[in-house]
Length: 155
Picture (spheres, rainbow, N blue to C red):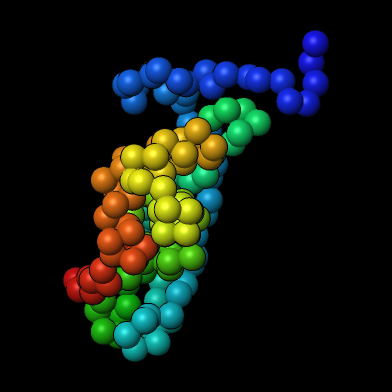
């Protein structure tokens, strides 16, 4: 008998190896621009190269799979001040982070507002949102206030 309230067990329960988890659903995003203003001098700069970055996002519960965003973005070179810079991805993720801002905010909120321990928060993220985050990463985010340090990248 099917209906609301029927218990459906988690198919991933008991899996101890990352390789055995369901494959991620890939979503493509593009941040490729022909020209962008230089953040240093404001000069309009042409695209030099195109790169790709993979970010782990909140999963697809209907398909019972995690979601990875593959973001293709452009690198630009300013001919005026001879600097290289990338298209802005700060709305998606912090520099150097492998997870989207939505994942970071949710993980920090689970620990700070709901009072969950780090391991439990990590399990909650997988069980309810299909995104695997090691508990030590959650701990680092909480201790840093949910933000990575702002490092300036100079070429």
